[in-house]
Length: 322
Image (cartoon, rainbow, N blue to C red; front, side, top):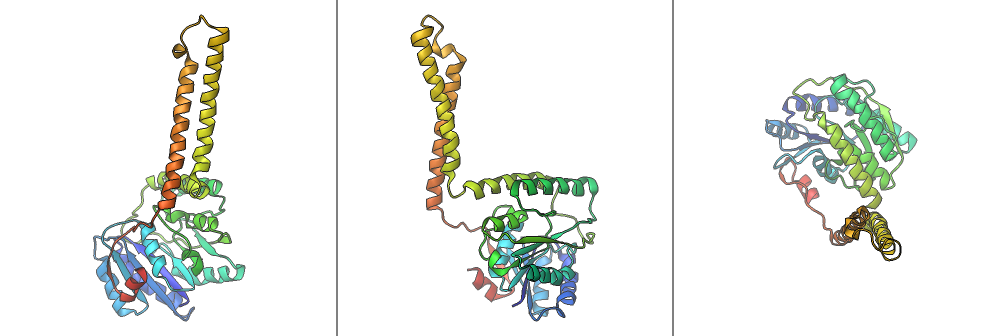
């Protein structure tokens, strides 16, 4: 298998048949073998019925469906698990990503010996106020925090070498940061290609402006997990020690001052230094406890199932999931 195309979707019934035809036209002359994996993330329209029809009509198309909406990250995780292609492509189902970009992106990935290549929608057909401007600010912050120099983290069109997606974990809402996750796992040969952005033809976007705030919070989480996820005591222990030293220092100061210099002054418990010492020592102890609990959780952690697959157009796909 040369190429696996993973397409997560939610209520995109009107786009699926045109997308299938567009992919077929774009790839049938450019590659010897490819598969299309539709991941139905709990759609409430007739998306699954159309996926089933497409799977019957086209042997290279398959679908799996979740029992409910679990999110785009989980849909990508499921697709990555069953993908067999040497190159794995992700794209959205709303016809805003062009399949005609796939072959040139793979060619660039091969030529530059990259681990992954991301699309860059330099010219967008979205609202300037509600999408373009927030997207630019978000991408700027993501570059600064992550160190991965991409202009468009949110672009759904990306191409990966198979070994990359088989060796990373996509969890929570981290689908925006797969390049960052890959870079932290050592797959840091990353580049981007300007791709054509299409105006949405059917339906409406599933993401609001709040996705940028959530995305930034996810980025902070990713920074912490990648930096201290395997050694939480290094983070909590450092700050806990600092707090305890500050509290101990104020305690010693209060004791010496009361015993030798201001024996007739007001009670220690009436001085502001006492409350600073008490607060910092309590915080220090709590941070240490958080570090210990983190270490215990890491050593007893087991893989948690993220989604429930209730239907599939290909029994072999279900076997690969299990």
